[in-house]
Image 1 (spheres, rainbow, N blue to C red):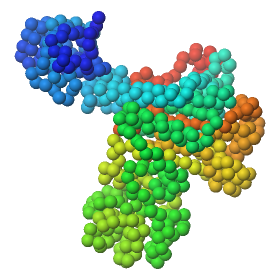
Image 2 (cartoon, rainbow, N blue to C red; image 1 turned 60 degrees about the vertical axis):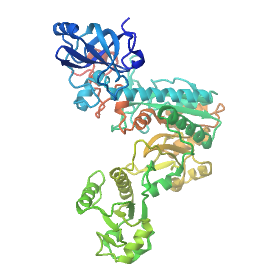
Image 3 (cartoon, rainbow, N blue to C red; image 1 turned 90 degrees about the horizontal axis):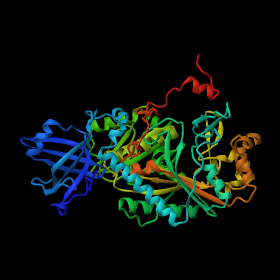
Length: 589
């Protein structure tokens, strides 16, 4: 056999045993007549000792980094122990070794802190995956997968596969399309989610479904997006919103405890979409810290009375004036404030500047707008914002949408600068009562905020008759947010044909178009569709957050780069003219 033990399991209790190990050479350290080598496999690292007799053989067949090596020897106590690794109390005194395969010098060091850049490591991903960092990430991913499956199994959910080759319905993100050879000129699409299939499974009576499934979206990428990603997709019949929230709150609590050893006993907070936007400036608030947005003036309505008596053009002409009280920053220097000013002026934020009011420890106030505000007015603003001595108030003013988004970003930036966004602290919450529609201003039409199968709140169904009231309609929808990142979302679905047809019509879809795209679903609703709802959460994103990171790429074995390319395979790539011809596609001259 190639090995009797792995490189991560030997301890002092194994001293004196004869073992055989196999793995990759991590390092080679020669000290006169003896050589030490670290041997690595998936399970860990064991130090090897080659004595004087074997050193002569090593001179003839020298070992290099990443050589595949098999050794047999005796487990002995190390004279110089290494407390940083579990096997650090022992080493193996080698009596026999075999080089199973040599290796070229790797293009980067395969260690925790590698010297390889992102693109280089992506090109040689099979080498990058040998690093302990990525091994731990993929191990965590496996544990989350196993934990989710075990929990859902106890509740009677069935894992049911749905198709990958489906019909293209260009709503929302762009589809990846696949040409059909047998039906030339026609195309399949890869699913953005199994949404309609899981609803059909509810019509079929399967009651509790889940799938840990690949989904595909041809959209612009960022740190937490990939063209192909994994989601945990779930659906339940005969449920209301409360049933869904309780079921999946239980799932997340189970995963936190099972995978991270973190026990969350209290119920997840619930916050309406409107409250999230008002207090945090976004629909995925990070509640690990307070620093709520104070609305001095919002969409033209003044809330802080002292502003009415101030002759300050910036405030008077602003649609919205927002503030945050940043704790313990009244001692910020001019240089630090200038840095914040430049930060908010960046194109990504888009503000012209930031106003500051320092609430000094001695009770005095000093601001960048002293010319326009007297001491009493500044105190009234400070009181409105709930600022204490030692705090600094930061104020942004301008158009509602841009200013609220900018203040949301500024709040998070200050949270980062003050160390308030601890990766080891987990603060989940539910955001509920989303708008059913949002206005696509570019095309001047209403679109579904989530997807067109989301049910409106029962009390708001009547409002769908009046186009002028679409902005008031709330969806029977919910998102789960963790540490300022949306990790999942779902809704109670429409299950009656007439209401689904109303929804399609509200989105500007003709009856003919709705029938062509979704006739199969509308037809199914005529055969006893039960009330149903569900949720899907981003599996890659959840794993990254549990691993203390924001980027999902290092929690996927073979991800794409920021341009959507697989630089290891060099994909996507052109295909042969013969393949194009076979598919009935145009062949380039």
